[in-house]
Length: 587
Image 1 (cartoon, rainbow, N blue to C red):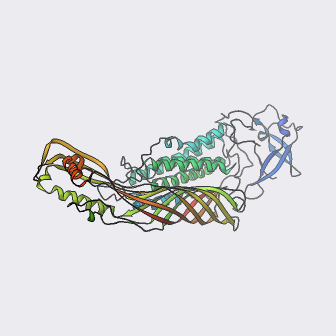
Image 2 (cartoon, rainbow, N blue to C red):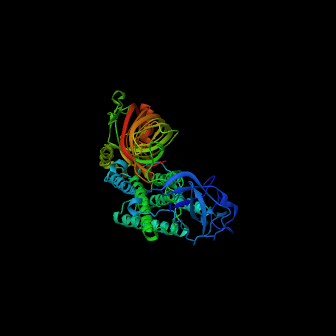
Image 3 (tube, rainbow, N blue to C red):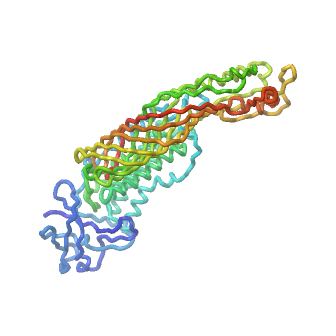
C-alpha cells in the first residue's frame, strides 16, 4: 500500500489563524468531504503533486482511520489528518507523527555548506591588510570603516529566524516537525553553535575593530542569526516555500552586515559566524533525526535539489577578489608660498597611490519571470588597501621632530602624532537591473546580468594631534614661552576622498544546483565607474594655537594663511573585475 501524507490547503501561510488537521468531535464532520492536496512517496524521494484525495462522509469507522479514494484506488488514512484545528496552537507537549513522512538520513540531509563559509572567514582573516590598516604601526587605528554608524537592531534581528519559526508554528502553520521535535532540534542547534563559537572565540583571542575585547572571531550574533535562519529553512523553506528561506537568510545577512558597520566585527568574523550557524543547525537536526527517527515528523521536503530549468531565482552571499586599476596619481599641493616667500616654488611632489588587490563580499538576489529573464539587485562591500601611508606618516612626523630638536622648541612642544584612521578605500555599492539565465541541465546554468547602480567610497584619512605650550617671539626672531597657556590641536592632517558616482556592471556566472535548495556559483563580474579623487592636506593647523603671532605675521606680510586646507584633485576611469564564488538559495 502506498503511503500518503495529507497536508492542509491554505490561502496564505503567514495568516495568524489557519486550518489544519486536528481535533473534532466525530469522523462524520463535513470536513472529511473536502478535497486536499497530497504528497506521494512513490520513489525514494518525496514528490509534490497536485492530485487530491476524497474521503467518504459516510465512513463511520472508529476515529483512528478512515477510507478514501486516490487515483482510482482505495486507501486507509489516519483520521487525524482530516480533522480541523482553528486558532493558536499551544499543544506544545503533543508529539504528533505522520507515518506517511519518510525519515531523514543523516548524510543525505547534510549539505555542509557552512564549511566553505567558515573557511572563507579564515581566508579573509588571513588577509588582514585587505580590511584592516597597518596594525603594526603604533599610530594606526585598526577599524574597518570610519563612519560613525551605530544601531542596536542587530541585537534583536539575530533571533528573527527562530522567532518566525515559533510564530508560524503557534499560528497553526504546520512545518517539518512537531513541537517536541522542534524544541529538541532548536535547543541542540543553539547548543552546538554556542560550543563552536565560544571555543574558537576564547582560543583565537582576536581583537575587535573597536579594540574593546579579544573575542572578535567568529561573530556570535551572526552565528545565532544564521542558526535561526537555517531552522526556519528546514522547518518551512524546504517543506512549504523557499521564500521562508529567503526571508530568514536575508535578515541573517543584514545582521552580519550591521555587526561590521557597528565596528564590532571584521568581515572575516561574520563569514565564519555564518558558516558555524548553518553547520551547527544541520548537525543538530541530523543528530535529532537519528534519535527521533520518524517520530514527530509531519511533512516531507518538497525537493532535494532545485531545477535550474524552471527555478533560476536565487538569493546569494558571495566573496571574491577585486582586480583592476593599480595606481592613482594626484598632483602635488600648491601652498602658494615657500618658507622664503617665493610663490614660484610652491608645489609639492605628486602623490602616487598604489592599489593592492581588493577583497569583496556581497549579497545578491534575483526573481525570474521565466527560466531566462528576471530582475534583481546586488549589495557589495569592496575594500582596497593603499600602500605607502605608514611611510608618509613617518616622514611627516620626522619633519616636526626635527623642529622640536631646536633648543627654543624643546620645552614648548610636548607631543605631535599622526594617527591613520584609514589606509584603504572601502566601497559600498548598490546595483539593480536585468538578470539572465541559460539552463544547461536541471543542475547547471550559465548566468549574466546588466546592472546600474550607485557607488559610495570611504575616505583615506590621517589625523594629527599636537600638544605644547604657546610661544611668542621678538623682533630679532628669538622664541620664548608665552606664559603657561596650553596649545592643543586635533585635526584632519590629510584626507583622500572619492566622489560618489553611478556605476555600470555586467558579468558571467556558472551555477550548480546542489541540494536542499542550495546552489553554488562561480562568477566573474565587471564594473565601470568614473570618479574624482580629491586630497585635502592641512599640515600647519597647529600654528593657530601654538604661535598666533606667526600666523598673523604671515597673513600681513605675504597675504598667506598657514591655517588652511590645500587641495589636489584628479579624475579616473575605474575598470574593476571581481572573481569569486557564492552560496545561493535557489527557488
